[in-house]
Image (cartoon, rainbow, N blue to C red; front, side):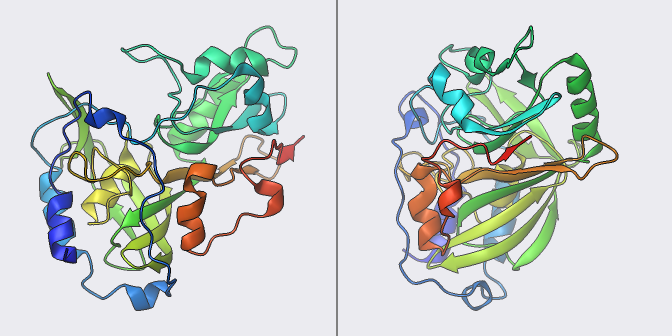
Length: 314
């Protein structure tokens, strides 16, 4: 299949009925040869597809949000092992893919069910300072009490918290580095909802950097400058390089069995004015490790996803 045909298929909307919303997790296909990003990306690569994606994302059917991967529900005694940072105000945990952070309309397990295990002597469990999508893994910040949550909420609202996401995308962006500014709004229909690009929507900006590329896959480091729902997923699709495993914004139903290849790799929180910003890094999870390894990544032993870790404990 030619790249042009692949991208034409990628602009088709994903229907999220009961079958397509439960895609089977998998590693996805990866080319074995690693090449330098600049050599692999031709000047016009993704330009035509990006325009088509941008137009498709502005309107059209509105399926319910899909589920590209599913992991077993978190066991209460597992949550503490995923702790990346802890102090009197804040916790940072490594959220597993496949677990929503809060209850949804269909019920089922969610992260808030297990936060009681992270009280560490306080009278109430910590609470979410921000959110990650159900199928996104990695750094998630929790406030330990109301004062902390107010402070963290202000930092996120001001854009003072710096976030780095890693993604494996199909194809590649038009340039090795860049920034996309495309406003987003939520489009709701009886069949579900999705985020779409709309000039009248909320401002949304994402910076990208190509880390490596192999075959038709590219490893991107992404920094969202705003915090809109599904922002990185929509922006990658608009660039003509949807995230591998994204059944909502990236591929037609049944076209992929790969897990969503999006990971909240690192976060930096300037919580204390007279101190260095608190930084944490989440190891690449096991279900994405093969894809990132093919693109040249090797996780240090101290940060392996299968090891209980407190990477930054104070």
